[in-house]
Amino acid sequence: MTATEHASLDVEAIREEFPILSRTIDDETPLIYLDNAATTQTPEPVIRAMNEFYHEYNANVHRGIHQLSMEASIEYEEAHDRLARFIGASDREEIVFTKNTTEAMNLVAQAWGRANLDADSAVVLTEMDHHASLVPFTQVAEWTGAEVRHIPVDETGHLDLERAAELVDDDVELLSIPHVSNTLGTVNPLGELADLAHEHDALILGDGAQAVPSRPVDVKALDVDFYAFSGHKMAGPTGIGVLYGRADLLESMPPFQFGGGMIERVTLDGATWADVPWKFEAGTPPIAEGIGLAAAADYLDSLGMEAIEAHEAWVTEYAHERLAERPDVTVVGPPVDEERGSLVSFTLDGVHPHDLSSILNETGVAVRAGDHCTQPLHDALDVSATTRASFYVYNTTAEVDALLEGLDVAKELFD
Ligand code: PMP
Image (cartoon, rainbow, N blue to C red):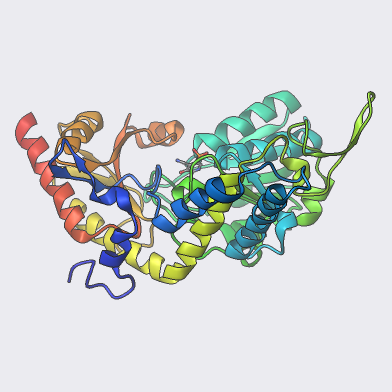
């Protein structure tokens, strides 16, 4: 059975919606795009929604009472409602548009962290965190004197939950946990860790950058307090991300950045703040991108998040099995028979990931090589770099076969 025969998605029809997939590399080699954990491609409906904005109602939001500004404001504000529905949030007051996941995490680290952390408190991160979580929280810990603790990763690529239970005590104010690891593919038990956090009156921030694009996510069912993700990894545009925050928390937090758009009233001596979520969106926001992201949510829902999850699990499992059966390949992360996100990272004996990725590029295959912004995890794995193949709604098992053929080409060259 090939991926196109797998029942959950009509991959051929989907591929038609992504114009970039028909381009070639070097004028003749078809593109095989397996770098989706870095950025996914953009379908026509999303491009159309953004074109429509620029063709028909491009204007600044919240400020004008002319027709274009009113139309833009309505679409931009409704985009928040659309994203709220997409992840099970109550309404737009719980959805802040940011630049990306990184900015969403900085918002929590800085606005919430500075107000709530001190030398008697601690935050708990994990050894598999993306730098987008590790660096902002380590910085805010330095400023506030808070302690940073890390949940270790075991040899099967899972968080050590026994150690987590020891690390989370009553001094802990916040846990920041990747929902799906962008290097290992591990799907972490976010709901269980939310319970652990709440037993100690701590909050939990989920890094959903690798989860929201590929599986149904319900922030209320997970019982997370904050949750961050990026538009460009979920068929949406670059330049936009989302911070979900429980309404009462966002209400109580000080702003992150200051300026126009986030104020209610300004005097020469001070200011009062706009309502949430606008209090956290200083300056002209990503208007076209917000509208594009809402179109991406529509697009993904039209395919069905369960169907997307099933398709990607199918392609990922195929890739994982084919890679793991090779004696010259070491796959990192959970074993073949376990759930994982839509990616497989590995090393190939005798070929550095950067060399492999450049040889694969010559065969049209785009993968990511490096530390994937998880240097401490690579230190723990005792490798400097891995090659990561990551899949989305338009990928097929035939493309995985092309990846494997590329590995053979690389081996021949290096042997
Ligand atoms: N967290 C995870 C798990 C990621 O995979 C990424 C992107 N590689 C990020 C955070 C950062 O996303 P962005 O660059 O869009 O801010």
